[in-house]
Length: 348
Ligand code: HPA
Ligand code: ZN
Image (cartoon, rainbow, N blue to C red):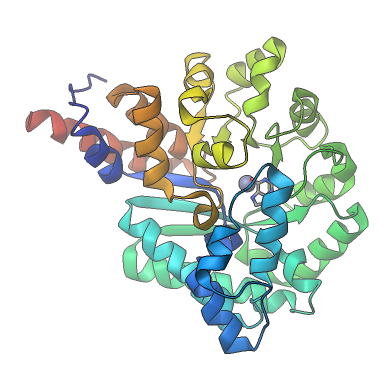
């Protein structure tokens, strides 16, 4: 489609207003320090930080593991169904305000069940927030259960089993946590079982880990999307495969800089991935920890890489294409996106 010229000054507003989907957000990573302290007080949980400021000051990460240690500590304040509701509700309010029309939300049940929180408490709290956000804002919000890859496959199986009474409340499974040393094939059987159950399957791969992990996520786990995947750039055959099959990569620019995957946003490889024909999407990952929600990711990335309306349209289009919505719903979002850009042209 023909796209209008948009001045650099006007671009941030266009990025913020365009309809889009978010496909890579860990709900525990949306817990703002203020809410962590509120929930700690409500539940009588003692935190190893004195104040909101002291906690925020600890957000100086050197790699994925240095972040995960703090992220799991923050999640320790979540005990009751209303805590899970409040966390997801806060995120969904922000997402709706950012013109996110659809979101597929990761959650980490093992982080909570290991502390004695029942699976039903986690899933029902999150589900009720998704339901209410759909009613109040018209946003479509779905859940994806993630297995923690630093734990055993046996633990992942027990987690899947415990979640089955709530099967209708989540659409897929994913794989997150410490990537190096925990290759996708460690979870071959539990992913095969998940596919048999009709669940969608995705996995984090190629965030810090090598292209070999992306190959094994595709070939062994048979995932439908790769989360991150930015290390694929080092393997031309893999790049060709991802482009040919249009396997989506859910890329998280601010996360990648905060966790030192790239030294600066200007050095991020998203443009190269896009130019190679990959179905790249932009996402926030853990917005409370990485300095911005989805629109901040778009605005800062576009400024750093000097991207324009063509890339904006393509990335928003990709977010709908890569989603797990049905074909008719995708078409209606794509139509909404097209209309949004056409209306811009009229006012030029
Ligand atoms: N990578 C792996 N595990 C995670 C992440 C991530 O970016 N965020 C939350 N858990
Ligand atoms: Zn992630």
